Length: 490
Image (cartoon, rainbow, N blue to C red; front, side, top):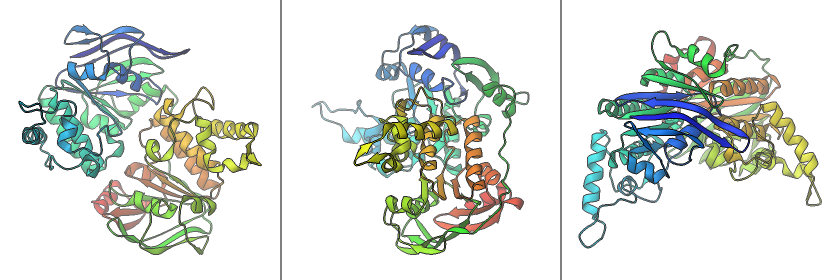
């Protein structure tokens, strides 16, 4: 149904794609995998009309097409569901589904009744019940993705591209998404599934194409002879090994404690403590309260009652500035909306929390700032042309490294990390895991909040499991299994 032949794309002196051949058949879910910077996003942007190739062809049903822009791609039946929601928050579900194509009456006015009925019918095809008059901003991330899929159906899309769909989803939401994808596959849709989570790739996909350094390594039928280790070797090359093993650090004195922390409708009576050299896992499904707890400790969200203690002393943290002064760093899960200023250079993002360190009399010492940036960027292994490269132009994994580098420069002793490896490839994930372990080895206290249970098990010495805003259980990582965590989380 969809084919690309020898697609090439250059950005200045950088060749992002070098002769990519790819095909997606009707009635299949085809994974597109590779490290950050391998070329996946560039290929997706070309197929969906956001970029034009320098060379090569795109074919639909055997016919060569010139995709001029995303609107043209939609008319051709190619639709993309992005990792970060593309819905208009202030519009209703129905308005988002038919945005730009709303049915009208003979008078040229919007036919609101027909709009509601057609939206309801589309959502019914996906077995999803929601009021079509509900505002998109009131929906959770999983529901917003369903609405985007419904929008694709509304234009009779034959090719559906999902870019990192699971990055913001928990276990139950992901299962709902997979049920929908299986239904669309049975209807003959060609589905391209872009993901770093290989467990999901093997659960839902039929074939996988591996990209590395802008080239296609190969396309593989997933099954017994092609497992996750095989794909990783193809993505990264020989010599890679996953070093995610549970740390055995010297545990020191308590650095952070919260007692009976509560916020109505978000979390209630949360007690936890973290000691120097310790990584404590905070597990739970999306919406369980993990993120809100981190924000409350960091002063980015108010709480109704409870106390926060730093190094044994009660503290009042009114805002993030107070938190930074107390030696607390927070890495949000939404690097686009809360962690980075994408329009600024990566160097400016790195020094934002400590800018006063490089100023004198209101004048910035750019040379000292540059040395600080170079040191942290080198330590994190950020792949970039230099400190002046805009943050938005970095791959997802490199953006996450920049976001973490920003906090490493603050000399914080307490790190709250919320989904630190969401949307990054296996190599970047391994690097970030090693950096987190280095933080603990250096004496920092780390709260690792994640919906990825294997990550929690591999990294933590103790685990707190959240369920509907409450701590449902406390587990010692040495003797716990994924099933133990899931049972408490659900």
